Length: 471
Length: 95
Image 1 (cartoon, rainbow over the protein chains, first blue to last red):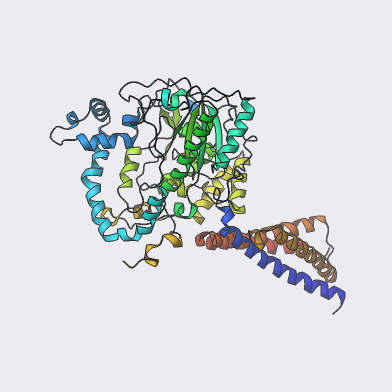
Image 2: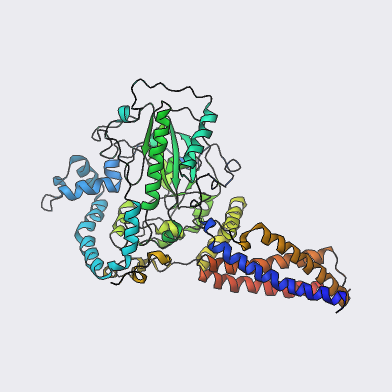
């Protein structure tokens, strides 16, 4: 064989080997555990998005008029369900309810109808279907309960007592500078296991006018924002990726909730040891404030059509906790990486939402801010219209930003963030719908409600009950 | 991290692509076709498209998205083949 022929043969062999190699690379990149962002180590290596490049002076929401703080007793669905079910008497109607709840339901009768539907229609159907089909989700529920088993006790004292160091006479240590303290706090948060960390000055608009119960605050009186709530630190982690894609039934909020909760309590303890006030606001229901806008202010991400904050690294798969504090900090800036434009055209979450709770329309004014309308009551109805773990989370799973960190999805994120024309948004939305379709939303329901107990993606092997347990 | 997602894999890919470039040049010389800059540019572009198609299909399979692998495979393969035919016709012109 002459030299030229040898070279040509080598080239042909090289082309085959290179192509096969790319195939193996792709397969490995797709299944690589390293692409499960947030589950590798505690060194903060996941905050990979260059937030400084996309920093903006003003957050990507718009203030349109006088603001009104949220009354958590009525406007947070978890707070009103307990008092409703405990007090409701059919013959007396809304007169059987505490006054604040009666007033709320009388001005929002459609919400009362949806809330009562849970008790009157959905619970009985769910019980019946659980007997017939519930065994399928035994491992998923066991996994969820296991993750939720550790729940730090939260204080029953008011913020003036609970937020401050317990040691008597403890002085505030003199920190060298807010910049250095912010750097330290972020490092500690990462060491405690937080995937993302952000800091902002606390906007009082986000604090509940009447907080949730059992937080040491008199919820019957309007709540004055404590002066020591100067800053808000955001911490949090993603839910396990494979179960999360198998929502609404195999995924669980508890896995990330539990971790974020522990991080927030630990970080509060760290700050208190330095002599400053700190109060954890943790999932699922131990908050005195609204979380999403604080994430936006802290540059963690942007609020999407589904009302959940979309982060560059984790998409919507981020379960945060907040720490309010008075330790002097340097706030981060909000970011704008194109989510508002993308959500305008995408609408995948609205199309896949089983309860139709996410609007397909434009933003409207809510409590003095322009945002997408979201029906929390109908969303909560769906929680009792399916089996498996509590909650739904389908909007998180289907969001095009919620993707593993491999080269395909990182490239897509870069393209949307850099494209000012909107063409990339349209192209990538079309690709999302063609390449990553979900079932018909009706299939997510239990069979008694005309569904098939479907999930967005198949569960991971370790949550398939039928493979491990004889039923 | 495995061999295929390591830096060493890309080092090997670099060697392979160098051999492919040299072989392609010899092959075209033997065919009497002169390779000029824009022909190399188009050829390089096509290699990227073809490589993207292969990697996309297998990445989708790896992350458990067979629908994306099949539909993406069909769409991107069609683009690869069509552009390949067009680019080959441009490159293969002897004048």
